[in-house]
Length: 152
Image (tube, rainbow, N blue to C red; front, side, top):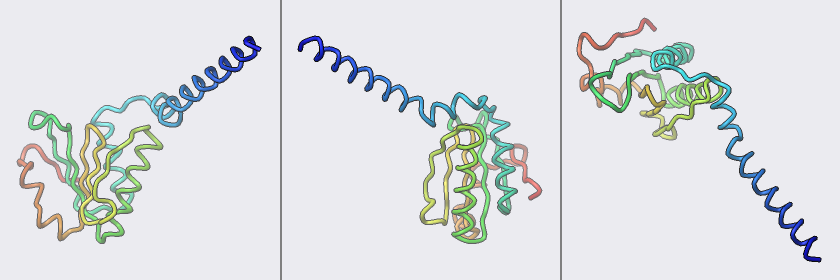
């Protein structure tokens, strides 16, 4: 009886160890190991491509290297409506997750006026035009030699 109980406990412990290992190495772990890490420049290019594909307007990239330790780049873009702002943001987050295994923190997607996406080395702001004009983030960070407007 004691031997059976010990075997049963071993089986349960083995099952739990396997479950924890599988859970921690699940989709997040697989995504992280399947993709080579991106440099901040590669990440920036992927983000700019996604914004262009989704018809974001007035896309501005700002080089933060040497100015801030929060990120290497900031990207500011506009969508024409709350729906487009939310869609652009959602598509970008999903693309970074699926294609690069990068999980991003997102704020403001439900409201759709101003969505902030923290992708690590690149911070992305997607605004409705009126909200962007009101906050004028570019003026805080933009210096003539450190920002470049993309031709979207």
